[in-house]
Image 1 (cartoon, rainbow, N blue to C red):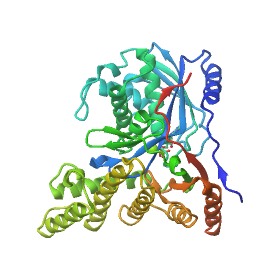
Image 2 (cartoon, rainbow, N blue to C red):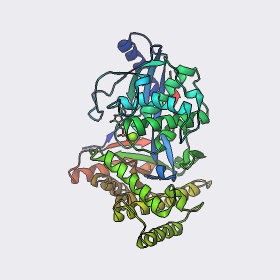
Image 3 (cartoon, rainbow, N blue to C red):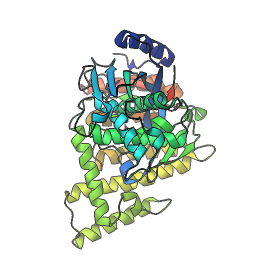
Image 4 (cartoon, rainbow, N blue to C red):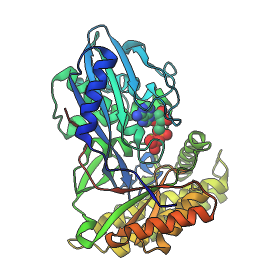
Length: 439
Ligand code: ADP
Ligand code: MG
């Protein structure tokens, strides 16, 4: 079989079509259409919640939200992906904004309704965020929402963040009339989306995806410091070196993903407690090297040997610690490489491969389809390749010479067939603009 490619999204055309559909569903035109992208991540998997550095970029695949305001405090929502098997439930949904709270909303609607709850939560401030009153939705605020996604869902390319962030921008614009929130407001909106995913959906994610979706710029990578969510923008364009980002969606079914994600996080928190730091990044110095990661591991072994209490499985916890501290070093190393005028992409590629091996052997979140995709990409001439996102299925990204893209996709396709895996999907990814109003 020939490789299957995901078509480049025509965002304007999709927005127009969504607007028409909105009128059919809600019997009035939308006030606008907002789009938010998914992301890829070069390095920094499973370390955002530990304060590590991540290196994401927003890609060109977006989720669109058409919206119109209501004055009765109700949120109505429907998704055009309602027939997609990966979406948890398929009904048009409604809730009173003031009734949204942890445990109250089930299925995909939690991502949308959760954002309204998160915005009100950030508006008044909480332990992880100072108050940003501009995000308050007000007592009778409500909205009709219609959602359409061009991001593959459940593929590790952050369709959930794209959904949250498009809804957040839509609600913010409807409420304030401001279509161009600055970076400070975008940081607050990202926190509201994180809160939605953490507390309403119940997925224990750490903010990487939402920050990339709301704060990226076309042609740039973010160096995201998850200690404080400060970002540096790296104008690192692999196209100048004749390279391109290729994603391989393995289409492998997610298994046990939610519980596994949370247990990884719990093990990292247990390791931090043994080391006496509040988050693992604090165990490393500024500008960390691999030697520093080794020192942390020695200290961990020493403390355990001396009887430090540990509730999690010690072997698993040590592996997660090793993944975390080496991943933190890899991220900061790549960021240093990409700050150079003419980046050493071969060195970046070697670090990507090391990152994949760490996700496979230490974080233990890959599946045979992901490992096969990486091996296939490397055998066919990729400069580097690794799993992107949470693993347990999902996608690989590869840094590929532009001239090799088709040949490489054929080779990976062939390898999947040989292994009896379902056909993967291929996408070329371009670092793109953050969430924005499109209509
Ligand atoms: P990823 O973010 O990598 O795509 P997740 O498991 O984090 O994978 O998020 C996928 C979930 O997000 C889906 O199961 C669904 O609940 C929700 N979702 C994402 N996009 C849409 C959409 N367009 N319509 C409805 N639900 C969506
Ligand atoms: Mg997600």
